[in-house]
Amino acid sequence: MKKLITTIQNIWKIKELRERIGWTFLMLFVFRLCSFVVLPGVNPDALSRAGQNGSSQDILGIINMFTGGAFENASLMALGIMPYITASIIVQLLGFAMPYFQRLQQKEGESGRKKLNQITRMLTVAITLVQGGGYLTYVNSMNAVDASMPPGLFWISSTIILSAGTMFAMWLGEKITDKGLGNGASLLIMIGIISRAPQAFVSEISTQASQNAWFKLIFEFALLFAVIMAIILIIQGVRRVPIQFAKHMVQRGNTSIPAAGARDYIPIKVNSAGVMPIIFAQALMFVPATIAQFSSSSGQPGAATGILGQLTNPYSISSSVFVFLLVVGFTYIYTALIVNPTQYAEYLKRQNAFIPGIKPGKPTADFIDAITTRITLPGSIFLGLIAIMPAFAQMFTDNQAFAAFFGGTSILIGVGVILDTLQQVESHLLMRRYDGLVKSGKIQGRTRLQGIGSGM
Image (tube, rainbow, N blue to C red; front, side):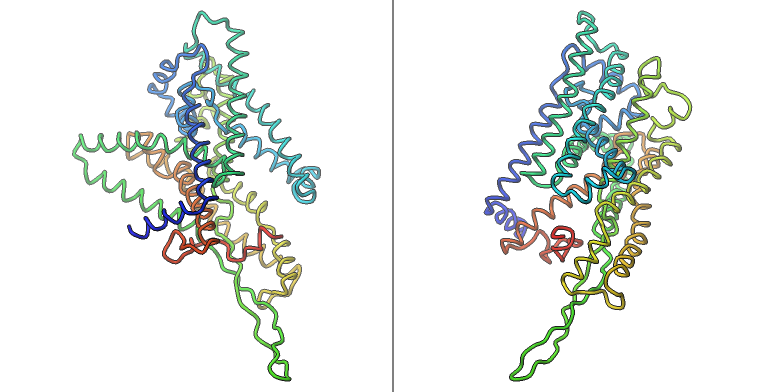
């Protein structure tokens, strides 16, 4: 406890860190405040009653969890930041298929990134218009629109407001990334998830207490704790690739003698992609829900039939298998984007370092690529299993909201984002020669070679 108080005092002493934390909380507060601003002419109580009647069983329940209830509140943040995430997925996938996007991503530096950001923003607007139309169809089907409001005015004004809300959420996320702590888009999703957690946990506790099922309740929370520990283990786990710097000459008297080169290692993370594969996969799962809203006569995804109906139910076998495959695939894709073995090899060559037993240049790049491919497989499979765990958890509890937190996207995003944010806080502390957030002064899994990945 004393160490915790000391760490908090050290954080408060650093002006830059204090300002970043304050800015982050301010942006999150604004985002949550906008989640309660209702669209003109909409009765959110009608949507809330519809949610209680079964929308939690389909993809709409997941959307509502991601937006922290903004979807159910019919607020201007009803779509949240997910259209921006979807646009980012499409742009990154185009980087594999089209030479123009490959050139922007890899060769044109800062100007290329600016162009990609512009394309992503324009694509976000287009996706928001499509998803906004599906959402308004759903709202209208729930008889939640004021009958006295002209239909044309409602559709035009609400579409503009929803698009503005998504763009504002995107702007908030970018400002958090630039001036705050952590990844802004991930933090906005996490704050929406956390806002629903107290209600789900209290409901589960009261339900089990009313049935005197104390052993079941303790078992559920013990298993949940074990899942969180396993997630931390896989997120922080690294494969240490030993490297050695070339020998150098040391002058002793009139004689120069060779000195042994320093030893270090490259920490290649088991899960280099972090939480992004989960976010990407979940964003793509919103596409079937949007299609189902347009194709269903009632405007509800849950009313869709066939494979489309299965995909809109996050607890179905088809949906679970599809999400699992998406997570595994996106883990490899995102790892390939952020881990470049050729850059590692070039960096080692510039630093006059080498991997023992491996020749510099292309053999080094091939060796690192092989290791990354092998360790990414178990990491991607683990992420996929955690992503579909709520489908199994809901078999043992009637509380769907609690089952959604029992693994799945919510826990992965929450744990991953919190760890990433804490790593940034620790970096600020260590740079100013304060103790880190843990006893060893280093969160396990942080990159020791600061030049790799940032200085290349």
